[in-house]
Amino acid sequence: MSMLAAIRGLSVTYRRDGSEVAAVRGISLDVVAGERLAIIGESGSGKSTLALAIAGLLPASARVEGSIAWSWPSSDAQAPPSVLPDISPARGEVALTYPLSPVNNAAEDRPTAKLPISPLAGEMSGRTERGVTERRPSAIGEAEPPLLGRDIGYVFQDPSSSLDPVMTVGKQIAEVARTHLGLSWPQAFAKASILLERVRLTDPASVLHAFPHQLSGGQKQRVAIAAAIAAGPKLLIADEATSALDTIVQAEIVTLIRQLVAEDGMTLLFISHDIALAAELAERIAVFRHGQLVELGVTAQIVDAPTQAYTRTLLDAHIGLDAASLLNRAGLHA
Amino acid sequence: MTLLTVSNLTKRYRRGGKAVAAVDDVSFHIDPGETLALAGPSGSGKSTIARLVMRLIEPDAGGVEFEGDDFLALRGAALRARRARLQMVFQDPLAAFNPRATVARVLDDPLRIHGIASRTERPHRIATLLERVGLTAGLAPRAIHEISGGQRQRVAIARAIATKPSLIVLDEAVSALDVSVRGQILELLLDLQRQEQIAYLFISHDLGVVRAVAHRVILLDAGRIAESGDARAVIDAPRSAIGKALVAAAPRLHTKRDAG
Image (cartoon, rainbow over all chains, first blue to last red; front, side, top):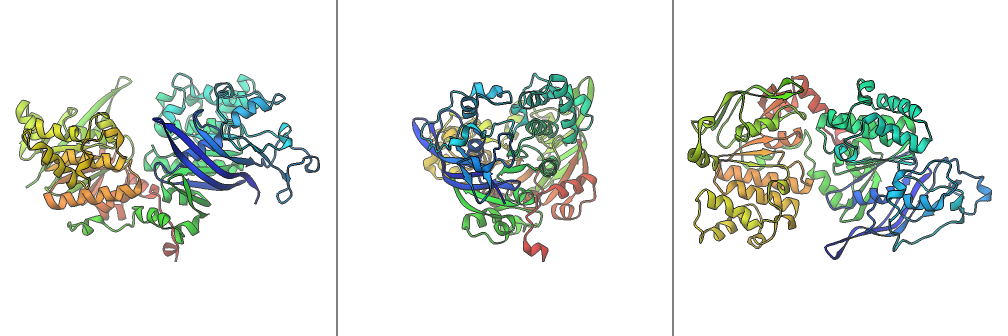
């Protein structure tokens, strides 16, 4: 078991109406390379803030404390362990800690990057790093921090707002491949075509030239997934990626995510409010509430033997196909 | 006596020059105090049926009879009066209300418009309504955008029951709520049904919830009724292709108890 990310003491505070709201408070959590980890919680639990912090997508006004130490299993920046000072002997891998603004950091600290930097880097260069506890290993020049789009793929809840409405689907996917893999446009379009097949879209050739509004919600989410995995990220974050879809399409998308993660050896962070859905997909589940980590365990333990009352509450609140009728409880004839 | 009878309801939309039937020859009835669920995938016609029943849109064919009258033929004052008996709660109460209105204002409107209570009586009525849905009267001066999602949906239910309806259309009314809140809202709806014999047209994509709260269910597929019957009987042993697909897709909590 090697670690992909070691999150330590992570707190995120938003400023809202003049007052400060702690969205995430003192989270420490290890993401294991290659695992499917679900982050579950109700609204305001901080689960999405955690995902945004990991992806470096927090708004500039957010105050961030704590650290995320990354260990990429394989990287073109990898050097022989013996020459690097910041080595975790237990893991035998390059470990690096960097401030919680990976995109910004990438823009500043990787002048010799071999790959073109995402246009996102420019947009987000105003990002603040106030309050960040920095613990920069000297190896940071050689080892690259993760870059959203290339190293981390992010799938949002609503594909209608995450996709550009006036750009063809093929171009949106090709753009990712071109930006992060250094492909030419023809190569990138060929890659996009393959990706559309990989996300099991019927008739990928015509979808390539379609605009998002011409597709159904499920098809759009498949396109968003294709774009997210276009550069071959190590980590895929699915942030309520199936919540806006109906049950049947949701099951299809979950199956697709499971297949893609297995085929590409990705680590999956599955953010959801649905404990049953999370339990079907994830190997481990982290339960969040009010910005804090309530409980973390393997799925069977969380489902069968939760140690925290809140986890039990969530399990009991699930209304499955075998749930007792509420009509009898209410004194109504069933 | 049947409360609502829907006969051969059809609604077509034009899409790319072609007529697509969103609702195709759908017939059903609801009895007083009964919950009928409409379930099906996106685009199956659930919400279109809700809008047709509410007369938010007009059908291309078919009839709606409500409390013994041809509901589609009602006009003017007669229609407005009858609308008090037929209310609707939407998925997102923040979108359904003016977010800057106060809770009191949201509840005052139906009482005033339908002439249910005089100006002097209304503050007391509002307090009573809030208590009926498990909120405190102290919430009345708060703005809709200031209160939580669960509180907002309780206000939406209070608004719906303000006019003493016999039928409430619940269009994915608990789908956006946190699970811990969802259970409380479902209990509230069932309490109201038991106390006031309110019937519900319960629209949901969640078969687990449908099975727990509905007496009967209609499974829709592409605008047509694929299957209907006792909610638990249908969901426990679906016969239609869409019923089987919906049941197969419902997330399940596999516990040790199930395995052993």
